[in-house]
Amino acid sequence: MTNRPDAMVSQLALRERAQALIKTQGVNPGSTKTASDALRVLFDLASSPATAPDALALLHELQVHQVELDLQNEELQRSRDELEFTWRHQTQLQDALPCALLVLDAGGCVLECNASGLKTLGLKLEQALGKRLEGLLATRDGARVHAWLEEASQSALGLGLALQLEMQGRPVQALCAAARANPLAPGALVAWVHAPTLG
Picture 1 (cartoon, rainbow, N blue to C red):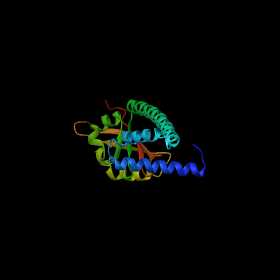
Picture 2 (picture 1 turned 120 degrees about the horizontal axis):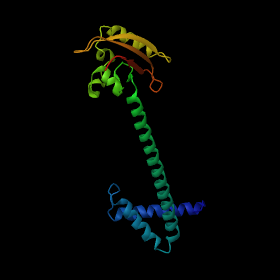
Picture 3 (picture 1 turned 135 degrees about the vertical axis):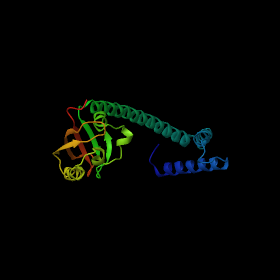
Picture 4 (picture 1 turned 45 degrees about the vertical axis):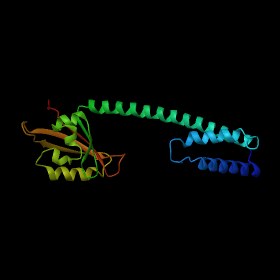
C-alpha cells in the first residue's frame, strides 16, 4: 500500500463499503461468523476490477497481521511455559527447605506457606491461608509476635524472635523465627520459622 492521500481515501472507502456489505447481508458484528463473513466480502471485492487492487492490498495487510499475531501467540506461550517451569522449580525448592517459610500480608495473615511451615504449624494449607500468624503459632506471646511483625515489616534486613510453640498433643517447642519486609509487596512480610527438634 502507498501513503498517498488518494490511496488512503480509497482504502477508507473500501473499508466502508465492506462494512456496509456486511451490514446489509445481516451479519451481526458480535457473532462468531463475523470474521469469515468479512473475509468473504473482501474476496468478493477483490474479484471486482474496480476494487481489486485495494482489496488485495487490504487482504495482504490482514494476512501479515495474522502472521504477526500467530508469532506473538507463540512467544507468549513460550514465555508462559518458562514462567510455569520457574514457578514449579521455586515451589519445589521452597518446599524442600528445612524451615517454615511464610509470606504474610500487611496485616500478618498468611498468603503462602511451604511444606515445612505446614508441618511446623501442624496444619493443612487451607487451614493456614488467610489466618494471622500469631493465631496460628498458638503461643502466649501473641502481643510480642504482633509487635515483632510490625517492626519487621519496616526492616529490609530481618528481625529475629525466639518463641515457644504450644500445640495440642505436643510438648512445648522452642522456635527460632525471623521476618523482614517483602521486597515484592510493600507493607507485606516474609517470615522464617525453624523448629529444629520437630519430627
